Image 1 (cartoon, one colour):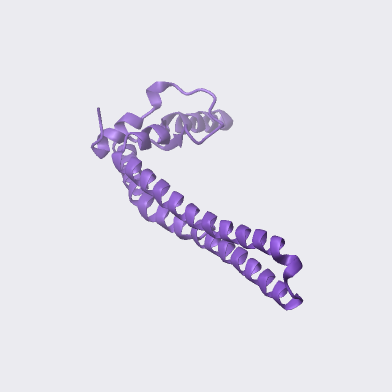
Image 2: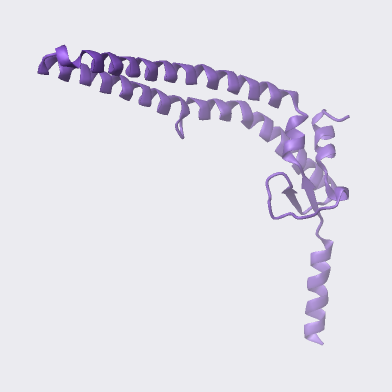
Length: 167
């Protein structure tokens, strides 16, 4: 009898929980600030990549020049040219790391542009969950474990509406 009561109360508490889904890709695609931030990041990335490629091209040109003139250079001049080539390659690698490294400028810029958008989405999701009693929200765009989900439990449109981007 005690086991039946425990099983009944466990099933009641599980069935009382409400689960919903959001689609972050859909939500982000419908937020103009996200599109602007993405374009700004792409422009910055292209600019910085061009700077890195220019330094690499300079290093390659130095190397080609070195190869064509090597037979005419003294040992001291060869060492000097080789050092210049290595220094230019190192400069390019350091610039690449500065811009595109794990804690680089692009990462910092992405954080500064995307954090306010993500915070706004989180706040909207939290408000909706608190007002409607949802216990769990899953992102269908990032969770490969969801094979099927009913569109009835997708609150992406509600999140956009709460943020002022509703259709």
